[in-house]
Length: 264
Image (cartoon, rainbow, N blue to C red; front, side, top):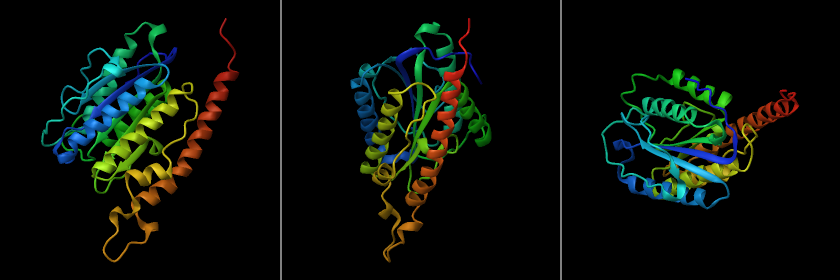
């Protein structure tokens, strides 16, 4: 689902937020709303122009109205809907946002495009987008259009989001502190990326950020678990290697673009 939408206006960013309203987030919905509101406030205060689209999982995920400045954006109430087809919602959002950007005048298109997904981790009912198809879709948007999908998964056994790069995926413990730390880490990543050009390397989540969102002790049993076996530690070590490899790949791609002869 590619769209011939070049990214051309330096200093302008678009953030599309997809918030899970399924019952899997349960009593943490208010914490999610507050944390996301904090993300918008932080991004609005940073240099540069940032436009926001906010949507929730469900049939209307891809039906986007006009984007609005981050400082004016409101976070909707996340009324429970039982189950959520998160993959289908993300696929619809990619299509809707791609169409919106393709319809912009070329000199108004953003230099950075972020899709920030906050989910409870469960997907029930997706019929249009399977895991492999969605992963390919996200990879295409990231490779060809410099989009970045940042995922915060709030769950007891939070793993990596199956649709994107691991270093842009963070697990958060299902606690108020976990939600706040996970979304704060996502906001910090977006802030770092907004400071550089499209395709330039951006540092992923640090081990400290991962531990703040999903403390190593979260899964410790009464007997005391070996911290080297806890999910967040293993994830951080593996993703640190993936982060370095991705940064090197982006660096080579960026240098290739700079060496490309100018069109006459």
